[in-house]
Structures are given as C-alpha cells and as structure tokens.
Length: 296
Ligand SMILES: [Fe+2]
Image (cartoon, rainbow, N blue to C red; front, side, top):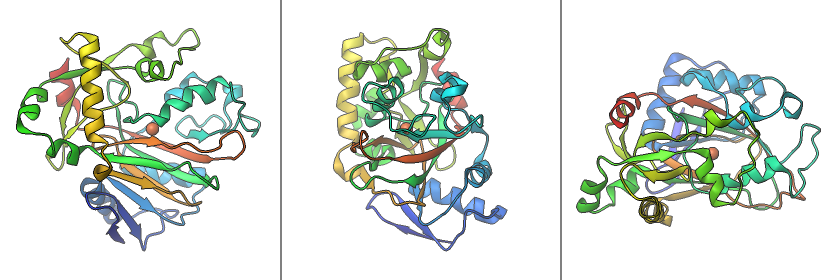
C-alpha cells in the first residue's frame, strides 16, 4: 500500500491495495495511521458492493446509523433495511430524480454548508466513508478543510480565548440557515442540542483542531447573536482556500475522512437533471469522551 500526499497540508491518495477484499490487521493499521496523518484518504477504482463497503468500514469501529435514515419511513428507503448504509443520492425509493420541492432534497441541501458529520449527536462521527456509484458530468465535488491547520494558524490570543469554549450543536441549527424546518413529529429527542468543546485534541496524535460545524447554534454562556457571529468568523478563517481540498469524484472512488480533524461540504450540481449516487458509512467517534465529560 502506498500513500501519496495530494494537497500541501493534508489528503493522501492510496494505491496498491484492493479494499473489496478482507484487510489484514496490518493493512487496517496502516490505513488508520494514514488517517491520523492525512485526515482524508482517497482510494481510486474500487468497485465495492454495498456489503463490501460495510465490511471494509467495520475494520475501523462500530458503524452508526444516519439521522436521515432513522427519520425516513421504511417505504421511502431506496437501499432497503440496512440502516448503516446511508443513501447520499438525489433519487427516490423508486430511483426517480427527486423533484425540486421534495422534502428530503431540501433537507439534504444543508450538506452544502461546511459541517462535521453527526456533530449534533452526543458522540459525533469519527470516520465517514463515501463511495461513488454514479457521478454527474459537472459539479458535485466534495470539499474538505483541515481543522488542525486552521487551528494552528490562529493567533495566540484567539487560541487562549477559545480553549475552553463549549458549543451547542443541533441539526435544527444547520437547517435553520437554509430555511428548512419541516420535521416529522416524534423526532424531538433527535433535535435537542448537544454540547461539544470547540477545541478538541486528537486521541492518537495529540494535535488540536477546531470542532466546527454548521450544526452549531450557540456557545455556552454567550448571547446567541454574539456566538453565531463569532462561529461565522472562525468558519471563514478555517475554510480559507489554503486549508481546502476539493475532491472531483470518479466512479469507484472511496473517500474516507476523520470528522474530528476536517470539515466538509458538498458542492452544487444540476440535481434536477443529473444523477449523483454515493453510499455512506460512518464510524462512531471515539476518544472524545473525555472532552464530552468536561463539556457536560
Ligand atoms: Fe456530511
């Protein structure tokens, strides 16, 4: 297995490995070490089936179920009853392109905002793995921003000021930014804000990073408008182009990233005319429990 760095500060492209086959323990450890260093790894030309993607993902921990999957009615699930497999596509259960005013489409449009997956949960996602099945002819990149490099580039005064800040995250706050508030009843518990430290320390590398996300709606002890304006400033700083890698998808790409060290966002494409079909798996984030306890 070889890893070639493809961006000045992060992101590795992995070659000489077939991830459709079961990994040895050494291979899994080498991928984890690569994740600790590069934060994002891209594998090209991997013709994974759904089962193989689930199998590959399980090498790295316990799989989590996406919130969209939990909230969808069984008959609306295109990929059947395997809730660990997230449907990142613009298709309905009947494989038709979603209409412009389709509720799921509008909900998913918030993925165009910079975020960290599942930061609205008490324990956010660790790795997310996305596999490209159908890729539009134009647009639809996924962009990543290195939150370690962004943290390092802050001045000392700002670092001291934010060291112990605790943010409130909820899916409601990210959707609010695009004017979406159409939740089915019975999901109140899933929408309640959770708290996370703004500065987190990676459990293995010890590097600090900014745990930013569009799901943030407040900072504990701050007036809401001041908190939101400040989070906007920090997000603007953290997503400057020198910290950003834009992944142009090809069919068969598997891209995995660590939500504890990067933010990401989807880019626009003509989703009313073209199909984009990606499959997602996520691993529960570990190593943040200490930070959790402190934040509580
Ligand atoms: Fe995401």
